[in-house]
Length: 324
Image (cartoon, rainbow, N blue to C red):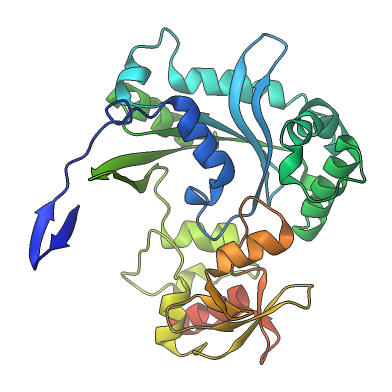
């Protein structure tokens, strides 16, 4: 990574979180408030717990529910040294915690055991003070599941996300093997850099590596004719709004409506939206409207002129391109 100063490119060296006095709890709190850092814009997520203790006295870092109804366990280690110095393997610890979440029977069970205590602890972050923590948790969780059409799939599966600034080869090998055996576990690197007194973090998804085909299977609603896939096309992620603007399928000045709501924004050339005279990213705008920790930006953004979501517009264009 480089930064430019007086027309000169200056290389920025990586540092460790320990070198800049970041504790594991600091990273945990950063992700609790900004889980979209590792969610991209293709996943909705609702944080429902922090430092949850299970029956065997294990303490998991963050707990969430995603748009598929999965309970998500986020486990954090500060640096590679912290992983290598553990008596128990990082990934095995996470698997044990995830197994305990498999015992959660239904949304009410999750609210009573995990979400209500979390809301009680962070009550100042929630606007509705007239409801009890359990009532508010039930309303928010069930609303999240309904909006994402995930009620029937609640906790059918559990998902694990590991976060660290670096990983040892043994951990990566174990995660790759677990992926190959259909365990939903991924790992992200949060790599810190420091310029003067400012800390910058580069985020990199290490495993699993998604291909173009994988994303079609996971995210697009209609079946895809795999046999007509354009030769040579491989992508690490679905195209974003900047590419959609380049394609011309949406344009600057278009009105974007929050799905199921009356709130509107004006699409800007850089992919942000202007709302009430303020420019803001679509992710942040929609997150605040729905009150979730992360949101599927393209699923919950409706192009007012066509009445289609940005996900539908993107899908139609990509299928057209593949058919040519």
